[in-house]
Length: 236
Length: 236
Image 1 (spheres, helix red, strand yellow):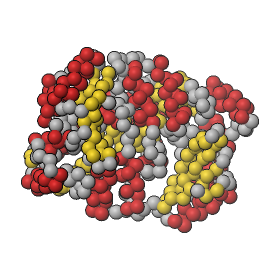
Image 2 (tube, rainbow over the protein chains, first blue to last red):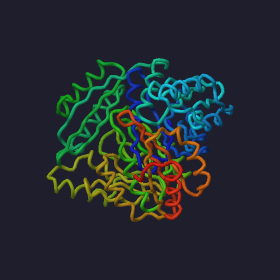
Image 3 (cartoon, each protein chain N blue to C red):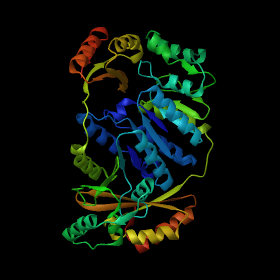
């Protein structure tokens, strides 16, 4: 995933779309393995798109496809693929219809959002009409969370699926250091599942959530049972 | 910045530390220009550290320095720098003292957190004692937000400073498309500041926040005044 936007890197906005994408991909068995966040800068966007599309099956981008001058994702994606970027009739029709429905004029800014790289397919936006697009293995989506989520929802049914991971977790009310060695032995024994240990401090007490993930429910369950026996705690 | 952790990429946890770091760097005039998020995977961490430390002045990492088997950041950083990783006396003393204060035993897991790459300096942790460390231009910090924030606070006074950006913003209650062309002209005229336009929908109405950033207060103010004249809206 590539998140595009100065507002994240300046600290103005807390990033929200990574979790939305991760949670949408998990049920279809697609792993999110890398995220990058870059500025509203064409060369930074192009470099990140090129690196990610070469090293991953699918790239989803978030941000920078609105109507204003700082929305430069479409240009950057076109540049990365070496194709031209023009207003396309089907995208323009969607925007004109939405403007008519709202009784607002069709402006130059609005039509910026009808510029689609040559050869791309459109991604539905049932919130504000302005489409995202797909070119090659890159899915270009809006940054506004409610629109990003709608576009993810439109794309998920079209993606190739994998084997979803099964997750089970338990909660331990001791500091991690107290059971880390035991946990390590269980992790070695059950090498076909992944075990993550996530400490939190709540009101001054230790709470550790241990999450077991794997493709086979029986193995994940067996790991959890072993952990409960060795470390204690309770299912969460 | 490099965020390390399966819990972010699986969607279990919403990332929180990027914003903390960005907001701490802004007042000292240091720009956060790129973030990557990678899995708890040694080769992924090493590759990201090597790429980021070569292309940026400073790299801050978050996550993976706890006591459990899935905390592999220290090994990965040592591998990236080609140095060895051993339990160090000063780090061990910090952990032993904290364990004594809490009346908990010093375990093997606890001592994992005293393993520091050769040549690194320690980063104070006034929350849970286990130190972060700095090696070269890479600052390695905990992922637990309260501890990450404490470590950032310890490091900020030691960093080289730049010219802080001044930010002013206004709020416009129209869709972006309605004023995008005017905004673009102002952005061209005031090319020495950056202008970002961030739409939100609140209860079905359009709210756009326009943020002007620059190093000179007078230019940022002049841009804001021009925007208020051309586009309208109110200071926010």
